[in-house]
Image 1 (cartoon, rainbow, N blue to C red):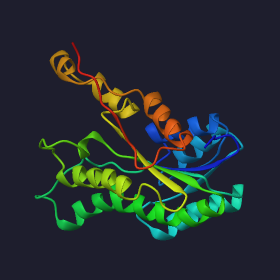
Image 2: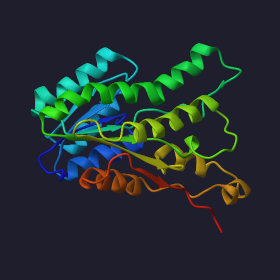
Image 3: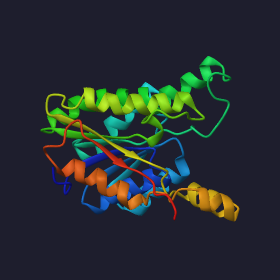
Image 4: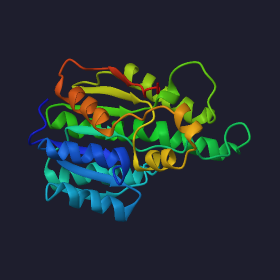
Length: 239
């Protein structure tokens, strides 16, 4: 699917990788619905993209907000072709399972897995009406492998997102794919690197450039044979 003239929705698009993804889709010629709970930065992302962008305030854990997000794409731009489920996070914020109360770790599952499934479900009908569509889920390397991880609930949610992608790879004209990056070179990552001691910096991985993640998303949208595909983008080790 070529992106020129298409309509895309990106969740978690106020800052960081979400903003980078939204801007890249806009640069490729798509109208973009910028969805985020951060209203000031979300509006700024839409402003950076230009007139073919609209911001909608969305808490992806809320069904009403997700429905309004999808409706904005159709009402404002007439169609929906691409959904990027990028919203998530919290893997670095404690307390974690098993010390956290059930409601706390369940909320991370909802943010990082259930919300993407629900957004996909809501996008199916308008995408089919538009002649087909593509969903790209942004997972994390925390969700693959067998090693321990500080936030088991976050890792489990991202693992579930990968498996959701492969299990729901093709939904009657809607292709579902996934990008699994390592540590991404967001503003927060750069600040964390800047605060490290020389020894900590030497042991830290080199973050994945945001452009590489954006390239992978665009490639998955364009490749009509890509369905249930999981693209791994690992971070690099120094030395």
